[in-house]
Length: 397
Image (spheres, one colour):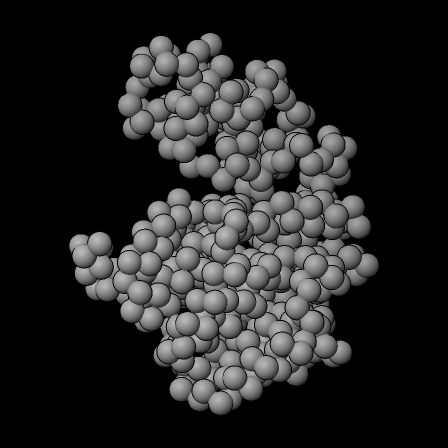
């Protein structure tokens, strides 16, 4: 029988922290913010709070009444829920797998059933699939930090891999599809976090699972996504080849055609083939772009990405005014996400190319602040391309 060598409440605390994608330091910060002014003044420095969270999660110490109350406030839980909480079996399998614990989504029966399927993959069924689909949808959001999403999604992939290897044939293909979608999300998050090597490695995993599932639409989606990873301007031919390969796997026109055409257009732009770039952009405009319909993955592409790709082509081709028109149309009222941060960085780049120094500097500062807040390293890389202009104009204005 598998057991854990720490108190159940310690494992539960760690599981709830990870579900919120907080580091131990961030939980300490949340506790400080949850305290009243008098209590906050008596708390240790941030380093001390981080160490205390570590000691609680490892079971070395138990929080006293004051800290227990702050933990409950930070986690939005009552004390009974945190220190007694759900069945030990639920805490156990979340602790051992690292899969986020999301009690607001699932009943105790759902949790117990999923835990038993993880213990014995032959028990996996449609309800197991529905459980993991719900978890993935919860984390397929652009308002969450990429690095935190990687930590939440990677354990799910490991568990899905173990499930589909030994599951019954009736659910094996569906579990493989989920593995592919999960790996593609992780790949995208590594890309947003600035790690192209890991992004490509996870794209390989996504493509392998899509092929194993025998899902041509999912293969196409993964190839199109991989074309978007090759945006370092070093290999435009590979971008084009991947986008063309994605379209070959598609049947009737779908929103994925738009993405594939625009990735190919970007490859042509990178290669300096302006006529081919515009031709592909025109063809993409004839394809469906509604990403809310029946697509191979509910987590396929963020809304508005097709506009971002078109603007990127125009920046690369040195047509900043056209790129500005596209980006200015989409940005007003956009939520503060890593995608918005990247679009702001592209807009700052376009303004710089258009020699609108004051606007470029202003938007660049906004993009930089949002990038730091959302963990959008890709946006910071875009700003790095115009760092000299930003520096000069910041002093000028």
